[in-house]
Image 1 (cartoon, rainbow, N blue to C red):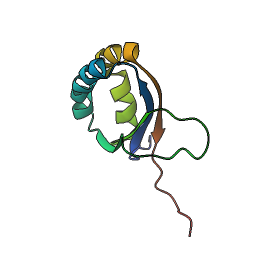
Image 2 (cartoon, rainbow, N blue to C red):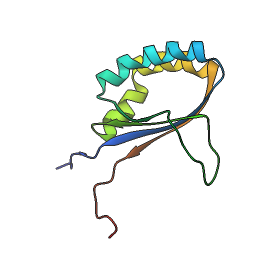
Image 3 (tube, helix red, strand yellow):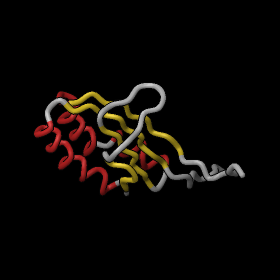
Length: 106
């Protein structure tokens, strides 16, 4: 019997935006996919410090009910349509990761 994945999934996104007005169209378009796949913003812009490595101007962490829903959202026709709006006006790094619910330090 296959084990069911119940861990949450996350998108970790860093983005530089070249055209803020066009980017707003992307924000409106991605809402359909995010709603469909149960996305919830944990981080969306805001103040940040970059003590190591590289950074971009804007950061987001988006939580999904499961890792598979995070992956499915990325591949969905709804998000791919939104992505076509974003790509010409921004440069982004995006990673989809599985949440961790194991032992913690201390």
